Image (cartoon, rainbow, N blue to C red):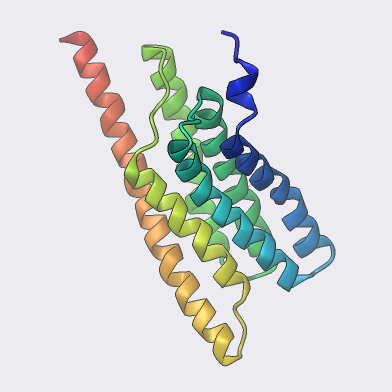
Length: 189
């Protein structure tokens, strides 16, 4: 399968690439330089590009197989890097890292099995998008947690998004499992 240059060089793919470049930048800013404010800006921009890449793709009719594969992959890397960095800096507990990692390992195994049996990959579901949205918006607020009035608000707001995000993240895994099981039943009927 050959991908045309027109499918690769799109505005949405550029936004996704910006988000991908933000991962090492965020890690360097937070873990290497301990620059909380700049780390927050990079996280916020990453969350915004996740929202806009899909909107722009549909608006400009620039949806592509590359973008459909790249976006969720970069989202997983973004979330993994962020939760590990936030846990290392004690902004979030390690149980959150464990829950999100266990879900992603489960999903990787489910996807591998699904692809082997059907030759397809999962289409991103609304539930999956909402889970990612909540998590990507939780992290910048959790980073701003502090004893100040604003920091307490950010902490509460961040945890609200995080709890919803984790719940939806787990429900999305159940939904993808249902899709895989339904496809398997259809194959044998």
